[in-house]
Length: 374
Image (tube, rainbow, N blue to C red):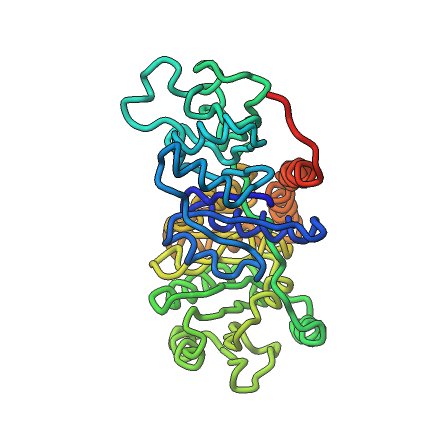
């Protein structure tokens, strides 16, 4: 059995991805997932055979009983929420253990950060510590943790799974758009519709054939979104009403469910809805993995880390108003610009795939009988 602990809300997606990959790679592997109750509820779509449990009360006796009951062969601890008594028991048992996405805030709490040896004591159970930033790696090494055990990998996030699409519809839509410049406004909140229209009108001054594709966050609001766009002067078609894109249209409301994967594949540039005027925000990794560069507003929760990673390699552009959006679309919507951004984003989000593979290889090796020496 491989034990995976999800220590914080920000680790839910990467825990889910890690567990799925363990099952894909391991023939008959058993996985135990632990987390706080609220986090376990978010992990409700794991493979059916996954065993889930809460961590025991943090005492040596309860920790020993927990390990005896589940008998894991190795531990992967993802994120914060370190339990001192439990991890001392793990260390004493010789259980191989890896700590991924380690951050100072999750390793050493409050005043303990200034106690000599606190860092080393907190992570003594782990053979390998993969830190989410260089500052944490430096702090751990200065605190006496073996330099060989600490690796500043940056945040290890989920492996994006490309959204599905209908291949026939992709062919039809590409032909209908006739190689026009296209940008996609995805999951747009009601408050953002007029901003999208204003941005498109501004960007169209550079390219009068430009087309705005727009999917509303409320998928049933397509016709009303179209009316708003028409009120701004845009000739608009509505997919749910049977319209196909035509040469006369300036905007096209793509309001059929589960088609984001189709439009991400078509549009070289995507604006992430909800980031400008508020609303539900989808992961920017979804368009990037399908070759679409990203523009977004300042509201990035709960995907702040993902947006930061894309920004670090110039795979995305942040704007703060509709006027800035119009300028950004007009500037970025060229094959060279969008291709460069999308490639940089793809390389960044797949960068840690090799690290995750190493974590999985090590865990599977322990399951087959290899043991570490401390």
